[in-house]
Length: 213
Ligand SMILES: [Zn+2]
Image 1 (cartoon, rainbow, N blue to C red):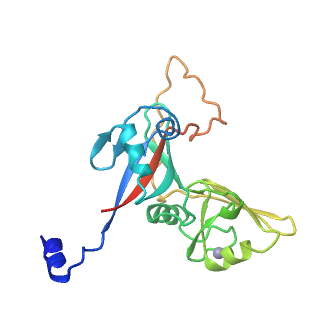
Image 2 (cartoon, rainbow, N blue to C red):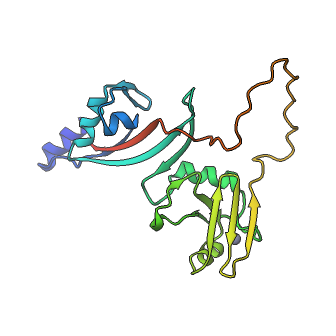
Image 3 (spheres, protein in one colour):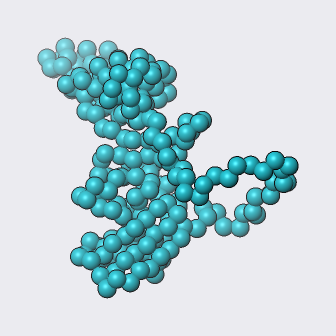
């Protein structure tokens, strides 16, 4: 009603208000002929073909974020973005995880979320490639000869002289008693290989569609 009133008074149609819609779909549905229904966050399933038609709309800005689901129960366990900037939710998670500047010999306040493998070198905007650093350490890392190698559990800093300094990620909350040990079972469980990656399988992708309404 307000839009109609403005149009009658001014003679102009009101400017479109952008809206953001998050859609999750499998990579098979996005890039091939998979027909697993897509999921609109907070709404429910829609046919994969309809989601792909949305993507093709010329007034739609599309931002891809790859999300990782655990094999088996498909619970969400990680996210990465094609954008260079870390999404706000991921930034908060990294600050929570690293607590202070992640450089082994620095406890400065986290001011930057850094791509350990630089974005310009193909480093993803992801939980796995993120480090919380103070501004000084982030600036030093940009100089020639400095390398950061990271996982969510660990950061190694290699200096131009070849020295390596390492720091492990601490628990999110100190002082929690260790989990109770399960009683031994009669049938030993098959051992999971230590090298089995937790994020072994990519099963879903998130598309963020910004629609000009
Ligand atoms: Zn620092």
